[in-house]
Structures are given as C-alpha cells and as structure tokens.
Length: 75
Image (cartoon, rainbow, N blue to C red; front, side, top):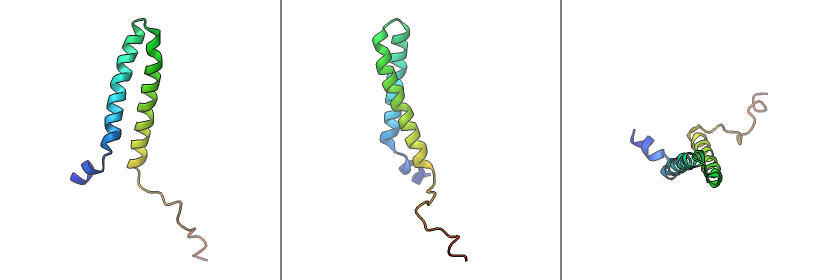
C-alpha cells in the first residue's frame, strides 16, 4: 500500500483538483451571465482532461514496443 501512495504523481493530482475547482467556479460564473468566464473554463477543463489522461497513462504497465521481434528468434 505504501508503494502505491509513493507512486502517485501528487503534483498532477493537485493540478487536477485545482483546475477542476477553477473550472466549476468559472462554469457557475459563466452560467450566471458573465461571458468572459467561458475562456478560463475551457482552459481549466482542458488542463483537467490532459492531466487525467497523463495519470491514466502513467498507471499502465510498460508494453515493450522497444524490444526486438521474438518471431525472428524462434525460426
């Protein structure tokens, strides 16, 4: 369990949380009639999506495309 806690990218997790808070606040302000709030909402939402995808990719195991082709060795 401790290794799982250590392997988490805390800076990315903080970025997701912070950008999500900004996105929700800007969305609420934009829905209340302030058109300028749409731009920071879009930027914050894009940051959330990018960081979540980064965290998902970092959790996957290594596929190993850099390894040599094993089919040539078996012949």
